[in-house]
Structures are given as structure tokens and as C-alpha cells.
Image (cartoon, rainbow, N blue to C red; front, top):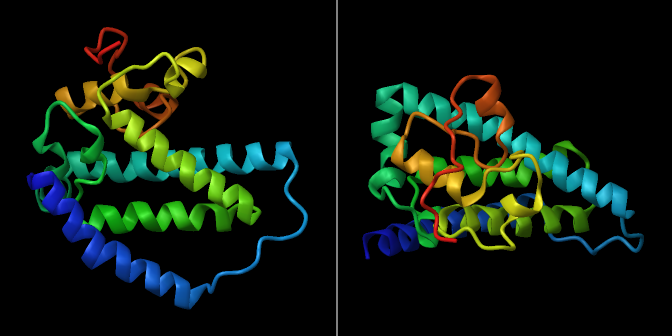
Length: 191
């Protein structure tokens, strides 16, 4: 119940005002008549995911390494050692605003088509929920992307059990390169 209360509070006091501000700052525009090519769409979505992965990896690492940042802003997300889908949104206000800012800004930085931006946002929300659901389904993103490039629920479960590991939200390369990777092949995500 606590997680639902935090999520409701965040949506009323952070998400709704941010949505209104974004609407005022960048009023809705019509979808361009020309759609992006499949290659442009994939490049924009993958580029936005990779950029977010780097940003959040750094943010997440700092918030775990600097105690004040962890206690003040990130600890609420780690109240649950076994994540569940709603825990995706169980964040402090600062974290929620930061994540929302990057999710909105990254497609603009990469000059993505509006359709690409929408696909990225929907996919980003989906994989964030999937990473916290605690289940490793046959259709899970981590099973569709080969060679352990993408972590999925098992990787994030290990992060909640061993909080100083697996900081990158989606992919595994930053953790492997910077020595924060923990094996998640044994993780207890339900199959």
C-alpha cells in the first residue's frame, strides 16, 4: 500500500505539473506526414535507450556511492528487496523528475521523429516495468536480445539483492566495463 501511495503522490505533485509545463513549453504538434524509415525508427529508439542507460548508470552509481544522495533521494526505491511492477514508480520526487527529464530530452537531443519518440517512450516504460516485475517470461526483452547485452528482470532482481551492483537500468555493458556487474544468470526471477 505504501508504494501505491508514493506513486499516487508522485503523479499528482510531480508528473501532472511536469506534463502541464511540458505542454506549455512544447505545445502538441501534428504528427508529420512522412514517417521515419524503419532504420531511422530503430536507430532513434536504440540511441535514446543507450543514452538513457549511460545517464541513469552515472546517476544511479553516484546515488549508491554517496550516502547522503542515497538516503535523501534513492533509498525509497530499495525498500523492497524483491521488486514488483509498481516498484518501478516507487521513487523519490527527484529521481522521478530526473528520469522523466531524460526520457523526454533524449529523443530531442537525437532529433528523433515524433513517432520514434512515442515508440521510445512506450518501450522505455514497458522495459522498466518488465525489469521490476520479478518474472523472466519467454518473451522478456532479455531473452530476445542475445549475448547478455540486455539484463532484464534477473539483472534488476540481483541489483535489489546486492545494491552495489548492476546500476545500468537496461543494458549490461556499463556495469561490465566499470566493474559493477554481478552475474544474474542464477537470479531467482520466476521462469
